Length: 371
Ligand code: FAD
Ligand code: UDP
Image (cartoon, rainbow, N blue to C red; front, top):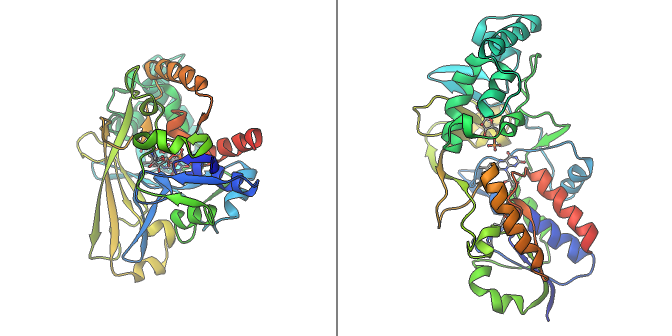
């Protein structure tokens, strides 16, 4: 055997494991079926702007160990995510905070906002929220649910809000303060120079082979290493023998526009039911901050995001963590535990709606156990 570990996937999980294993003196080979490293955080330079090719990525965490870890491989800028919601031309601040409540209802004080939410919640008669719709109404009332949540969520997930788990909406903060910071996180930012550079720094000196599909060359690749860290979809590993897990996929329509400023913000969410895309990302505002530097670039790059149900051949982006898929995942997990040589990790390997910091934390945990 030539390698101690074969790492399948050069996304954050694979890159962190490969780095730590190499630092621990192990011999590591990384393979990825894509033509580039970095998985879903891959960024590419267009018109002088780092474009987030697989969807906008904002790093945020409360985990100091993870923040210190990424700090070894990149300098982070001071970007704070504050998306704007566009509902049929009406603009609202996100996440739900005093600016949103003021625009929606004309309320001025936190007491007035809280009373309005309570009144709408009472009218809806919800005591114990059982699904995303009920959870949303209990958190912010019916008006905000109808204008800012229902349309966006149903486009994003392709399912009625009454059939979605409540936890998805709990990702968003609700605040009775004037604060448009989308995340409740102590640390936040975007790596200067792009995520790809950060992952390349993690992988420095490690052998990486691109354009190689592990599942299509499994026997030959398995023979090269003692152990395999697999970060692809768990159901694909088992050739979908128990049926496929459901994922949401996203199609990105990226355009270069001959103007310096298209929407004045990195993210604008289209929260109505009619616009076919969920949101438009204007990549330059992740990097330059809302200042003169961004406007100095004559062009801008935008991506419209269209959400769709995953089918074979599409990129699986979001695991659909509902009960049905949770049960099927447990069955695949039982199969995975019998694979002595293979460890499953990451968003697809564990079928979990992980953020970047959680993926890194999970990889570091594995390193502590394994190395
Ligand atoms: P991936 O990045 O998916 O890496 C898996 C790698 O394995 C890929 O490179 C793939 O090509 C490779 N692979 C798969 N199968 C095979 C095979 N058979 N052979 C070889 N290689 C294979 N998180 C945040 O914290 N903040 C955000 O703002 C944020 N925004 C997001 C937006 C979108 C649209 C999406 C989809 C996710 C977002 N996330 C965000 C989550 C974040 O992308 C993930 O947590 C993280 O990138 C997962 O890393 P990973 O290594 O587990 O998986
Ligand atoms: N959401 C919404 N309106 C918005 C933004 C988000 O209703 O304008 C809901 C939607 O259901 C989404 C969930 O909040 O799936 C979590 O949002 P987040 O931005 O965390 O989703 P991500 O794209 O990061 O997974």
